[in-house]
Length: 141
Image 1 (cartoon, rainbow, N blue to C red):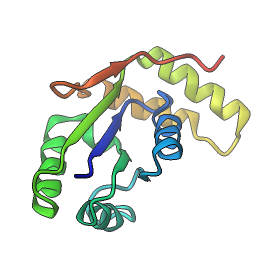
Image 2: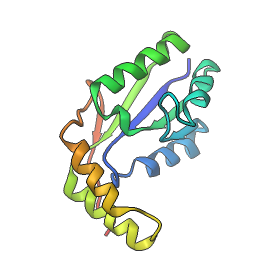
Image 3: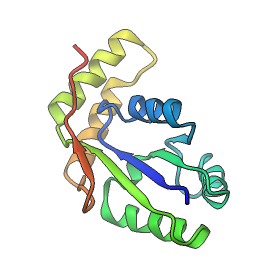
Image 4: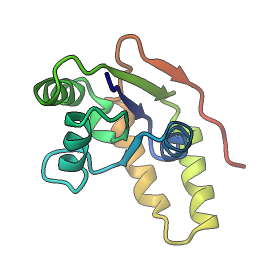
């Protein structure tokens, strides 16, 4: 049976990089943001689950328990018994914000200010799911 791996963390924590690495190594379907109803990756994600494809998901909506409960219910309704595992980057606003700023210096299309503001809002409600693997963040510079 296929599995869903959800990668959680603040902006700048390394979620997308890890998801890309997992997808490249395993050939699983990779869904980076927009994995909530009404957003572009929701239906393709559910199709992949239905088709029993391994999936890796990056989505900040699942930083909070109610979001994860919604995801678990949707996955269970789509393909009963599909396991969900979580890889979480530590909730470290200082390192995440520094990485957002460093990324914006390298790529001016990045919104460091907006990402840092989002980190401030999300950090107070970000919780680790039971049984999750928690990884440290690494500074880009």
